[in-house]
Image 1 (cartoon, one colour):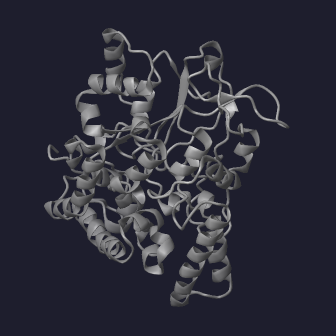
Image 2 (tube, rainbow, N blue to C red; image 1 turned 90 degrees about the horizontal axis):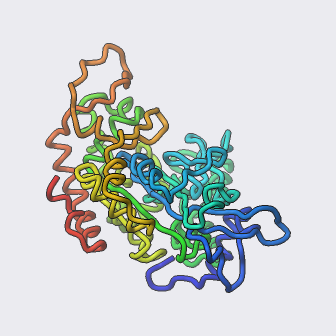
Length: 433
């Protein structure tokens, strides 16, 4: 939870059981091994009173990141003979939605939500591929699991905060008066976390929730990240809401950057970068009013999240790769990834065949866009001016304006430097991009 005092395994699992009661009804308890010793993938016999066939949870997770090729990487990994696709009948959590966020449809932050997005960390029945091959594994892919922002996790992790904000709003605190609700709700959330044994305020995050379920023996965390300003530029042209607000062309992207960065710098100065990265819109009304809570900016602030994954799982179980390296040298990158996952090395011809497969795209207004090269790395043509207001159909970007590039490089440079030190790899300075 914190770098100074991580909880004991039992304490952590007790807190996690409050958040994920259905999962912990069947997960093994006690000091002994949690999972089948003779399988690579974490599978287990449900504990009483549950009964039935063995259950499994993923062995590996691709944690994102959006607009970096996460789904393309997942599809290539799945062509390894020892990697089984997640069964079609099981829930698959695309984009912002995955098993560890229980995300809701947007537009219902402090009221009733029309439907649930995500299904919690619910184990699935033993897949046939794993039943016949005890060395086989399966994994999960997430569009933005790496960056556990407040908006992405509050429905699962911050229900006490949400309940207090709702009560405050219903009590008539509106407009400027609502500012008092933020501190009250955050204080209530912190007290709840302490009451379930989750530690001090802000320590109980998604990495530790996943650690409570998995332990560390049978799990691998993999993320593919991209130079942050280019990732943000791609996101601007992919998600229509930003172009509707700020405009379709390059000037719109400049306006988006200029409108957002001051609030981020203000928050960093007032609360510290990590608190802002994980609680931004939960801290203050002025941050909640920032368009889409600066979510796309935080998705590129990798260092503010990676350290927590490393603390929860250790460097040997967490691997961060660059999208630029994956695109330039897919054969070498895949060989390294398979080695990290611990699956059998493939013959050169088979590995080159996987590396040469067509790029996987998942287009759609609310789906992640893996293999993002066709949008951001090759500008085919600059679109003509729209004839009607609010036009957002094209996803072909104009080159990034120098003004935006300078602002973003300045903002992300210290974060990239921190990441490079954290991972002991200067490539994450992105000096070559």
